[in-house]
Amino acid sequence: MTQLDITQAKSNLSQLLDLAIKGEEIVITQDNQPVAKISPVKNP
Image (cartoon, rainbow, N blue to C red; front, side, top):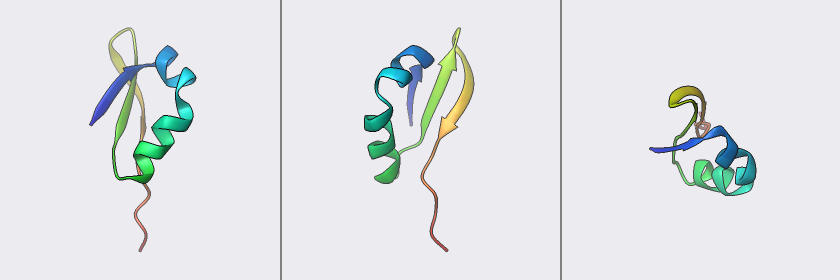
């Protein structure tokens, strides 16, 4: 699982989506607290 600050996430959204497509979960933090998660969608 990748974790990064919201400012970094804004700058690297395309790369984060590529990671999610490959199965990686990404946690976005603000002030060292998790605020959101990007994760792959599982196909049924």
